[in-house]
Length: 152
Image: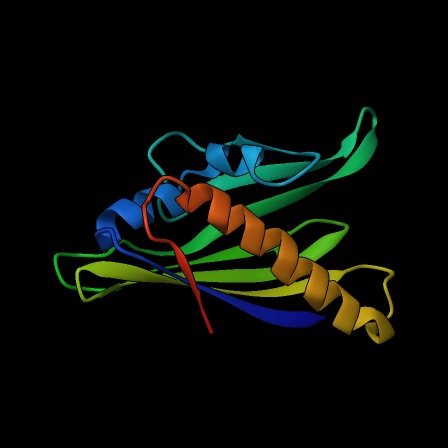
């Protein structure tokens, strides 16, 4: 199990950033060899279930997830969500926060990632790869929102 954190600042309103980050089908274009299928009816919210299918052809695995916390940002508030990963290969959770900051917003993505059958010895590598993959995915989701910057 490894935990990593990704933070991005965007000069756009929190509500707009939230809409981008929670557009589950849009994640498909951001993660290589992965497609997202939303199982629940639209719109997204508490209880939404979706499956990330990672693989090439018939070789791959499903990463089912459920939204167990859903608090969109209000006029001046912070939006928060939590996903529980319930797959046979990947388990853990992700918490995404979108908070207003100045005239823009900051996204904080914290993820606990556990890959079954991968020993803890490889946690530092999994953490680095997770930060890279999910950081690029977040950047892709936020692309077009001018002024995206990485925060630490």
